[in-house]
Length: 45
Image 1 (cartoon, helix red, strand yellow):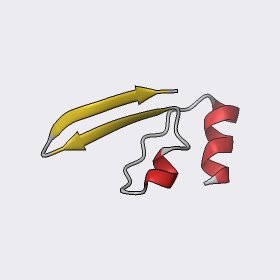
Image 2: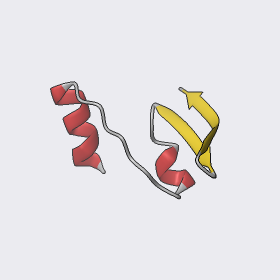
Image 3: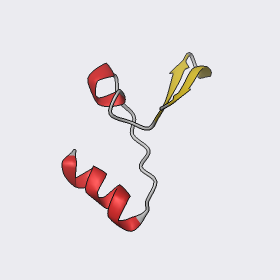
């Protein structure tokens, strides 16, 4: 996970990650929640 964060910062990249883990999702700058193919939440830090 640390190497992904480093690449995002160092190379000004966007990382799209799909997870069921709230712990991992909470490390993101933005979390989009999808259920049954529909966006039900969109939170930015």
